[in-house]
Image (cartoon, rainbow, N blue to C red; front, side, top):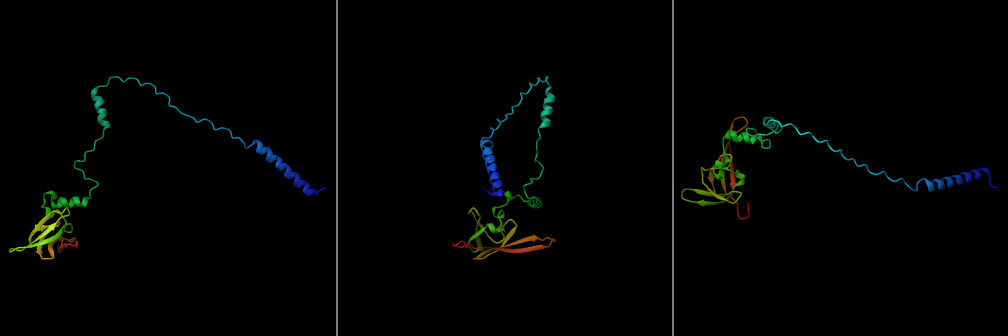
Length: 184
């Protein structure tokens, strides 16, 4: 015969095996089916009673109250920079009425050639669309109101006058370099 502790252990193991066999056969093999989905349907609405004939003036007043109209007349566009709008108002300049050479910044113009005459040099400039213009000394050019001061064989010198932050007059001389066949 076996010793007592081994007998107790084998008895316990046997009981556990019987319980697990019993539980495995009955407890986990089948799950209950899921309940059918609940479909909610709206109850039919009770029929509304036909309203009594309202006067036409009351119907129009109700429509006018419910409709909100926006009138942008006299209001500033929130998507346009207010600084640029104020500058245009102060200057009183309409860009559509300006000559073509004053509609572009100096950086947008290309110096493409020089014509030498008895009266002086004429510079040939092109805008971004490829339109050509001729300039001579004393002509206005650029958005800043610059004046062509001198035309040489390699550049057009433009004199621009500004008012500084403190109210002082600032004079700047810019140049438009001749564009050669290589693009520079």
